[in-house]
Length: 264
Ligand SMILES: NC(=O)C1=CN([C@@H]2O[C@H](COP(=O)(O)OP(=O)(O)OC[C@H]3O[C@@H](n4cnc5c(N)ncnc54)[C@H](OP(=O)(O)O)[C@@H]3O)[C@@H](O)[C@H]2O)C=CC1
Ligand SMILES: O=C(O)C1=N[C@H](C(=O)O)C[C@H](O)C1
Image 1 (cartoon, rainbow, N blue to C red):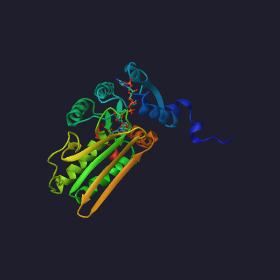
Image 2: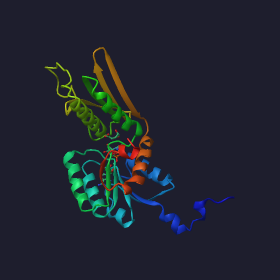
Image 3: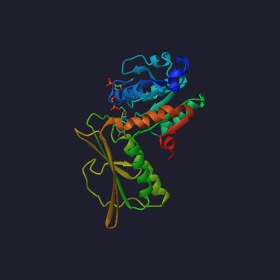
Image 4: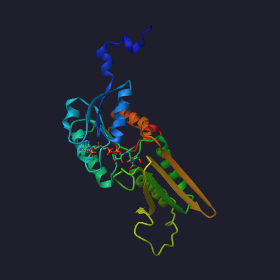
């Protein structure tokens, strides 16, 4: 049997190359998948798994250099604060961030210029491309609406991805000088026209059998363009998560979305 270059390295050197990773929300739907993906990666080492009720200090005690957070919008800020204070880079998939929360994280990071935090509403490559395509298309169409469709256990609505998509589309429309989308609705039931995100209606569907799906509907005289992405399995988020884990040590400060990690 031939031995590889890695096999010939002394054990200490080989282990030194592994990135020690802690997972927060480790027993959740996403956390379970992340634990599997980290365990399967040759260059990463799972050193801590923390879920609700567990001792957060475990990640620091275990020497995690990077923490992956898929918990809940109401606890994620405390987790990020803890990691920054303990010089641990953060890869955050948990949703629920607004400009105020992002500014708070940026402020915390000022005291720790070597620490990186990436907040990504979606790690799916297809979903990231959908956002980019929607942004590109937005200026050509007077009408646009976003429909997101998810499993019924999701606690937040609309999804973080849909909010980010709507904001990107709204910014592209503003840059192009487009007026508000035409809409003659004068009488409606509450919620019938969706949530208004910077002038873009966002509709949220919760349905058994679904995982995570999104459509951006764009309309002009005599034509429509529908952009759709489907995550049928949470494995779809893992290449993006692992990319962020490997990259975040080289990206100090706050990054929103992994577009720049993908060269987009
Ligand atoms: N960015 C992306 O690509 C994706 C983002 N998400 C987002 O990730 C988040 C998690 O989603 P999902 O995995 O489906 O949710 P789950 O509810 O399945 O998982 C969350 C887990 O975190 C646990 N938890 C709660 N509080 C804490 C805490 N203080 N410390 C550690 N763990 C805690 C929960 O425990 P308990 O159940 O007891 O509360 C649960 O086990 C959501 O915000 C979702 O929108 C999801 C998919 C992809
Ligand atoms: O809760 C989920 O499942 C998902 N949450 C993220 C979001 O809110 O955008 C990403 C993806 O849609 C799956």
